[in-house]
Amino acid sequence: MSVGYKSIQWNRQKLIYDLILWASVAAYIAIFMAVTKGIDSNLDIRGVQIRAYGSAAFLLLHVILSIGPLSRLSPKFHPLLFNRRHMGVTMFFLALIHVVGLNLPGLPLKTTGALTWYHDFGNLDPLVSLFVGNSHYGDFIQFPFEILGVGALAIFFVMAATSHDFWLVNLTAPIWKALHMGVYVAYGLLVGHVVLGALQSNRHPAMTVAVGVGLVWIVGLHLLAGSREIKQDKATLSPSDDGFVDVGTVAEIPDNRAKVVTISGERVAVFKYDGKISAVSNVCQHQNGPLGEGKVIDGCITCPWHGYQYLPDCGASPPPFTERIPTFDVRLAGDGQGPVEDQRIFVRAIPNAPGTHVDPAVI
Amino acid sequence: MILSRRQVHFYSFVGLGIILPIVFIAGLALRPNYDMQATDAATDLFAQAGFATGEDGEAISSDSFTVARVPIAAETLRLTDGSVVLDLTPKKSLPVVDVLVYWDAGSEAPEALGDEAVLLGNLAGDARRRFEIPAELQGQSGQLVFYSQAQSQVVTAAPFAAEMTQ
Image (cartoon, rainbow over all chains, first blue to last red):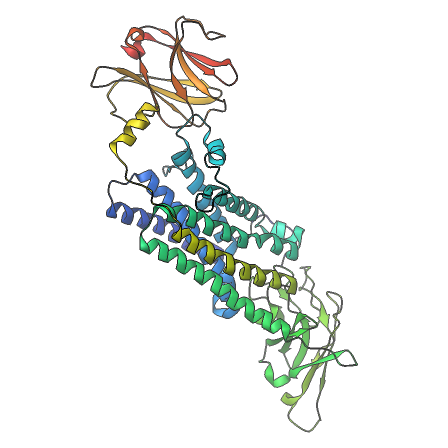
């Protein structure tokens, strides 16, 4: 939720998240360099640094790309989603250091980048050499793999530059999401970059197996989670003549939780709370998170991704916040003789305008 | 996510699931045998190309210049074979094309390259470059001229004191 634009909204959870993230990255780079130098002490430290930062970025990209589908498969991974964008920005800077190195005044940590290491041996400017040094664009195995990395880095730059909520709010979540789906293209480019680059010269089986396992893991995980989503989308409910859809019984929904159903192709979260039933869009206005996988906290539907909140009966964030989501008319029906938990819930297929108040169905 | 984004996500990974395994397997199956062994010859080639890869030698003097707003550290060394070399280390790549380094006589910075200017070598990138100072120039003061071959003009010239090479 947001009252107005604030450049940075830090909290304790974000600080802990970032500290763990950065400590892990630093530990990885230190261990990578120590182990590599331990295996071959003749290796030039600058070349080892380039590989350390490049592999750290590639590994972190695997972690980032795993969080989304894992969260779809199990809510236990939702906490990792909370600050995923900081992981993405960290990954971009690791990739950037891999390319251009790190040489900031006053910073004792200095490294050489691949641009200098591989392209600073002639009369050409290294950046020019990067683009013209290998022109085998028509050859698969000799294809200039560096260009694939440049393409991925450009996508990561756009994503890092637009990662802040400022862009999310101004572009709107669907456009922002579409823009950030460029990470899938970037992942494909990076796999090509590694296969046609590092794996051509480094033939150690462990390296090959690691890249292969990472590929199978990421693609397999996304296909598994995606196929479940598609399957749920195909189980769409159609309205009867009165425009309402039978979505199940009251007993199917735990207290302060929701049942998510697909009505006419879009998902609706039907919440049970305080002896009432309300239905709202399953899509959080912030990042389009799955509201139906959240719960009612302090009387508000709370998104499991970043904690954005909405009142169940009107789909509006509590004042002074301004987010709004569509609501749906709800009614209960039963034979009047059985337990109330056996009452069936009917939801109107056509949504109301975002923020429209709807009287909850009383159980 | 909304429905359309979920579909884009799923079909993107169907595409990646087809393309990437092919790239991975083909990349392994077709990789040629490169001779990756580094030899002493490589060091010689770097030295011939003007990179300071050899011995550090005995320091004679040091100075600094600014060429096209890029600071350049200069250090002269006497190597064990008695030769005197000038090592130049630009802080970053020069924003000038095809820079050649000349030694030219005179106390004034020349506006054009003199007929008697002596070519020391080329300068590119930000790596430490090594230029051998001919014996007849050692102990002489002059100008270090940075000349853009592509632009056919002197970029800048810096005084090069006799003390730098003796």
